Image 1 (tube, one colour):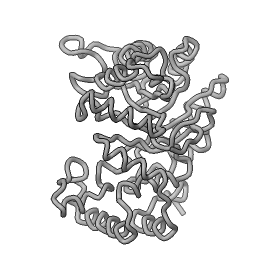
Image 2 (tube, one colour; image 1 turned 45 degrees about the vertical axis):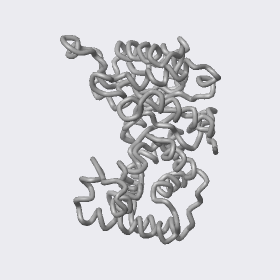
Image 3 (cartoon, one colour; image 1 turned 90 degrees about the vertical axis):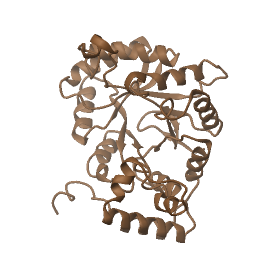
Image 4 (cartoon, one colour; image 1 turned 180 degrees about the vertical axis):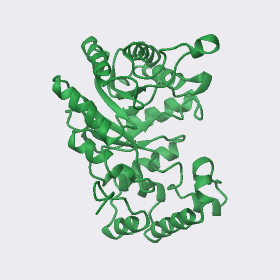
Length: 331
């Protein structure tokens, strides 16, 4: 495994981030534990989750699965850089479901949410506590006040963002700097070959303010994972976002060109998509969410995959980026 610094911090993290969103909804506890053991054995030290994972009536379940894995001991927690998120509504069912202050980034909800996450995760601290979404109703002054308290209490070490616009990263860190705070150290954003809008402002802002960039959905919902080849071989039919996207003739033709290019060079599409992200400026490491050991093994191969200039040029031709701002908006 290869490692890098997380943004401007001294924290060393793996170039792949283990995403856990499938743990619970699609992967049972035993298999989830096996995947985490295999990931850690391979050198992955950065695990990402969120308090809402598990979804619906089972929200919080994913954190619980990680917690029972930590409880097995064997230095599992000490070897893990643990990131979780806060924003989504965690109120229970029934009349409590609509009770206020169980979501977003108010100081009261941040305090409640972090304690609940610590309990589910069976740990006494979280390495990177991330804001899952921008909260337009809560000023950053209040958010940073709450984060300061958590850092002083030893419950979290760093704060990060997810799905923030570039100007929100700037707002958050300018305010933090004025008060002598560290501010945001990472940004999780939607970024992959087929979705490159983050290159316009989010990634430049993250670079300027020293945030590590953690792309989510690196295979764009499976669209970049060899979906057409799998369909033709009868291995798997596209589902969800990728199936909807492939109904568009232009998108289907684009994906076909992508798969043909990589087939010509003997490269697996999913591995190429991850390897491409690892070449991008500012990227710390993409989030991979394997449901099986085979998918984890494929992601690990991507770390050592070096794409030739010919392949990189071909990928840019098929999936041209918008370019940085302001040029992307003007001239």
